[in-house]
Image 1: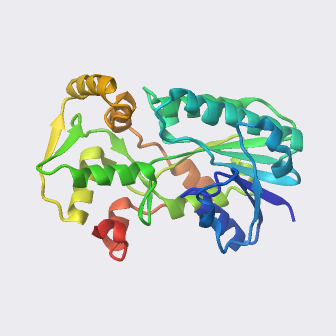
Image 2: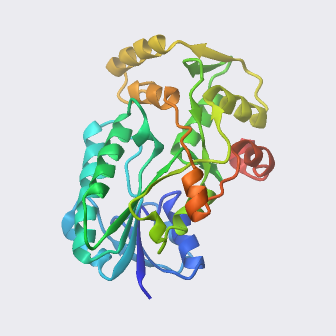
Length: 309
């Protein structure tokens, strides 16, 4: 049986992908960094665990040996040092792509981000955008698929972005400040739907050379998402639109007095850029079928401690 390699295998998405692939009968190799603090996420999963670091090319040959498919999820989402985004998201991906081609990997699935498709990109989104270009280089041995997930939600709140956002909604005492008017439309995605979509790409030749948007089943403006979350949390605080120019001025001030300010250029762009991208090609070609955020939040989270705090 050929082996599937998953990088970022201990993360919120990666660990669930490893589990699902194993449940579907695939031989899975999970690549983790040495002394990975999240290693417990793979407990009880019948997978092979190997050490590897995409920023150290000399560590990649062993994890890639005998691998037919790579799912590349390892990335930096938040960092105070912009150089870290480039070192991991761009140069690390370049290392993995190069070594995968050398190893004869048949199919390389790059998990990028909706932020790569923004009109104005964050530092994170720019490194994802540049890394996507690496998938365009022709190779006789390796076919590439790019997947662009939107913000991920799920048990415990979801990915880092949603957890941070909900924490901020709870934090402000009298009102909830919203960057701009909250008109940007998003399509948040359930982690279970995301990993199911990824698993559907295994041995699917129709996906070779394609870029798929993996968004959710419904789209809302940022204001609407905030209102839905407030309704679920039982919060009645008013939502106050803060002009973007004011947010930029505050971000500039905070950059001089705080080491890691919450409000900064990238935070602002993440709120005001549209991310309601077309998911129909994924529906049509691989059977991708995501649920709606509002339905899930209001019906599937009542036993989740995160939403009850």
